[in-house]
Image (cartoon, rainbow, N blue to C red):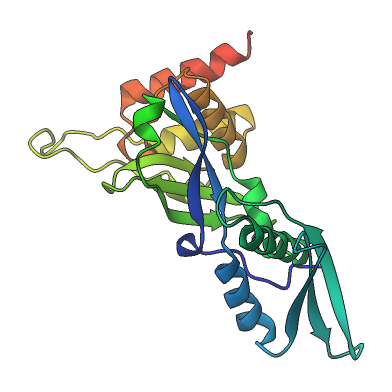
Length: 240
């Protein structure tokens, strides 16, 4: 049965720093309780759901009215305390987890591992925002872009061929008769020759980036030299 709740929009997803190391940080995606409330109101109506807490807010049951059955259907989960306002945080966390049982925000579990390389202590000071997200037919994340508070893209993941766009010519370098490298066509051809789907290619590229084997260069600015480096890394994997 399909999830009755729509997937989250980019502006409904928050980002927080996870692990901090000397050479980088990890980022985690999450939703807040207000997001869950809004989606419940939007989908089933504000009078057709309710929440109850037990065990001093450690457990929460979210119930939705089933018109066909003529009864409330509930799903329950347990939360953990937050670092601030422990009791309030516990209630909020148990509520959010119960909503995941209903399917709200469950797609966040399909997010790729997000690792930013650099000075971990400096990177953790930034504020990060999801600026683009998309999902495949199974509800898995196949597009994710995160920017810092300066508006710079620090993470750009995609397994969608439609995101493989031809780079625009750099001003002053391209004139009549000058051919600009077509990264889209090259990657599509490589996938066809090697029996890879766009998803396979995108996920393997992300693994290579996270392992430090290739630099994180967006498809839209990938030149011929960058493409060769990418393919060489792919080919090397076959013999390791």
